[in-house]
Structure formats: C-alpha cells, structure tokens
Image (cartoon, rainbow, N blue to C red; front, side, top):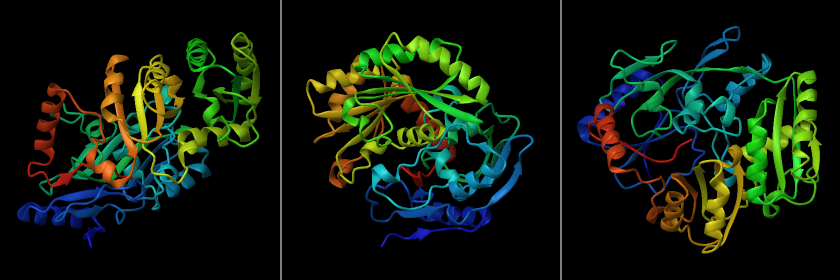
Length: 399
C-alpha cells in the first residue's frame, strides 16, 4: 500500500520534506483526493494537505480570506454564503466526470487553477490569489504575496504556485480575494444555432455593454443532458447576466433584442440559471460513469468550433463549449487521439489540451498535459530547480 503522509502543521510538513530530501523519497502531493491520480510508482509516497485545515482570517469588509490549504471548499463557501460573498472564478467540481470521491480543498482549487464559466470576465483562480505560504523541496517554509503580489526577487511566486499541480511545493495556506454574490441572474437562450453560428452570436454578445458573465454553446448532442425540461428543444447558446434586479432586467431586454437576429430567444429564471451554469462548470453531460477519454481544450474563442469540426472528420467526438467557445469539453468515443488533437490545435492557432479521463492503461501511455516548446520547458526546468532541486514533487493532477 502506498504510504500517505498527512502533516498537521507547517512545521511538521517541513520536517517530513527535509527527511525525504535526505533519503531521496519522492512525493505526489494531494489535497482532498477528488482528482484521480495515475498509478503511483513504487517508492513514491503521497503527501496530503488534508490535515492543514481551517479558516485563518476572513475580512468581509475588505473581501479577503485566508485559509489553510486543506480546508474543504464547502467550508469556505459556507462561510462566504453567510456574508453573501463568493469565489469569483467558480471553481469546478470534477468528481462527477472523474467518478472520484473525496472532498475538494481550497488548496487544491488554486494548485490546479480550477476555473469555471465566469473566467471570461473575472479571470482564473490564480487571478484571485493574493498570497501563499508553502514548503519547498528543501523543507523551507516560505511566505509570498499578500497585498503586494511580487517578492523582492521579482518572481511572482503566487502566480507560479497557482496551477502548478503540486509539482513545485506543498501549499499550506492561501489568501484570496472575493466578490459579492449577485442579487439575481438570468440566462438568455438562443435556440438551434450550429457551432459556427453560435460562435458569432457569442462574439456579438461579448462585444455589447451588457456585461455577459457566462457564454456557452450546448449542441443538440448534449443539450438534453442539461437542466432536464428547462431548455427548449434543439441546440442552445446560453448567455448569463448577473447583478442588481433592475439592471439585469434592462440588460436582458437589450441582449434578447440583439440576439433575436440569430434565432429564437427564450430565458431562464434565477433558479434555472444557477443550476445550468453549475452543470456547465462541472462538465455534467460527461458524468456518465464511463472511462471514455475526456479532454478540456483551451483555444481562441473563434477556434473552438473549427477544431471540433476538423476532428469530426477523423474521429468520433462529442463536445460542448464554454468561455465564449474558448474552452471545449471534448469526449472521444474510443481512442484519446492525442497526437491528432494536438496537431489540429496547432493548426487552428495554438492552445492546450488536458486529458482528464481515460482507462488507466491509456492514461499511463498518454501525455496528460500539453507538451511545451523548448524555451518554455527550459524556463520551467529552471523554476523547478529553484523550488525543488532534488525533484521530490512529482507532477500529478490533484484536487
């Protein structure tokens, strides 16, 4: 059985890593265990942040919170809900699509840069992160950020740790900014657009002064798997508006009028809106209990539908679009076709693809993250050397 270490303090974590550095024992860092790990090699231990839990400080007036990395996300969100505040970037919950259990942690959210539909206006998780405390591969406890984002060396350590998937250091504490919960929300639905028409409609909506906070396209193949009975028949292009009730009402009228030239327009109320965008955030159509390969692909918003159209000529695929078309949830019917996918990503202007799910043997044989060019890889190697000179922290998807 793979050893699992759960230090209860930063000092305990630091001592554990110091001993590992002397023995050369590598770690896979894990938060709440919600994102399935690939098979752990012999001689590799798991280092969990789950024991480092609790809200350290919460200042609703300044809309900031500090929490230990192992704090369950639901604990953070419950505290925020009492003050009608929220995490702006809508962290996703991938347990459904991965068929995993565990409890999402706030450290895992930032370590994986888990960002949902509001990313197009509020930025990614890393853009809300103000400060971090972490233990590096030398067993040193380091504090970075706060009100000032960069440390004295000029390296933005906060941004480097966000999205590093536990490959650089063990996050022990995070400080992040918050936003007020909108008073209400509605979703404008344009029906029966094909993927290219939907891309044009979303581009038009995002160019308007109506403050769209979510833009997604749900082709007919997936539409029925969202909000049973709430969406009209046919493909659905959905645009979210949030804010004060009076403002949302005025903006919704303006947006609906502009979208009428693309197709039939309808609306979802606040309850339907909340459920729909939660399901979009979590990739609900693909929480199907199967190991069929599932990718999250990030490209330019105008390129997403072009990528899917090209792939459909050579592979069995199913897809829907978030981030105004720039995020493609892409399920392959059989083979992950990683080489084909990445070739087409380059052909449409570049981007990156992450393989979230496949059979264990397929995951082991497939490069999960987007390959880097030589310059970026060299820079990453220098960063890795600085944080973790003995290579103790092995990169895995974590949650």
